[in-house]
Length: 350
Image 1: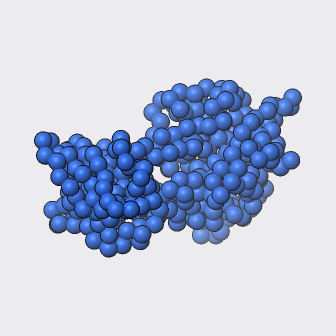
Image 2 (image 1 turned 90 degrees about the vertical axis):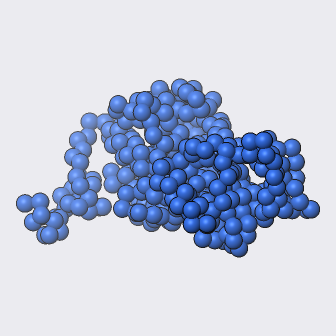
Image 3 (image 1 turned 90 degrees about the horizontal axis):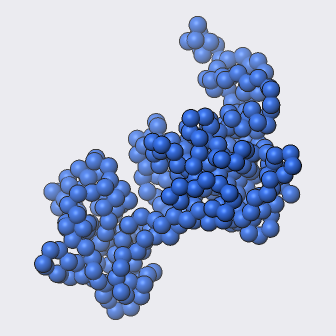
């Protein structure tokens, strides 16, 4: 039996940052993740994808963000159960929980924080009859390593941020990048749309809209896609076809835990602490939903912080906690003990 203060289900960015925030409160964390390594989608699906909305980082690769978060939380020595899926949860008489994985590993904690991102997921695939024949033969649904496309002809299909971002990124890697979208308007961030247009004008990206890929062909591996644009149909030669239509998320066994679910996400009380309808169980990050919810990593960080403050009160009923800034107390001074701040900081505060 693995015992901890906060059991975190999901070792993505939100879960990892929760370890740090809990550590400041002297609370120990253990994380469960079905993937074989921490980082969630950032490490498994797009480790080389740049992220632009992390404070203080104009740009950081998803894999590097995971590395930085691991560095930040390692001082608090979190435990990990990796390569196992949280399967069942049983509430104990004292209000604590036992969570058992699909491999039988049991975890006991007074607090459970679900930080499972989108849950288990699979890519949404376009309806092309023989597409599966070319999977791993030039058809990929996820870009993990950009160098794989070095000096290749790549056709990307999609209209969201992933399609835009990877088209921009690969324009400096592939010999030719073609972005195809069934509409003239894109769903991604405006600056990404403008950047794609700039690269198109500079001759670094072929932009074909409104159009869609309706067929693939090749001998043993993909050699071309068939594109339908209005009344016109034509063939576009390529080495790789990457349809980026997003992921189809599934909560998996968590959906059977008695939690209130809305549109495949867990409803929480965002007015207080992101607790679910079951006291002691929280949901933070992309896995939760509430009025005004934004599925951004930085929002998950905020939710993790408030969750830890609430968890502290449950674990330490009646114990007074005084919030301190890390610039004053450092990392080790968050247990209520007095710790002298650096003189430069004291002077600045005075």
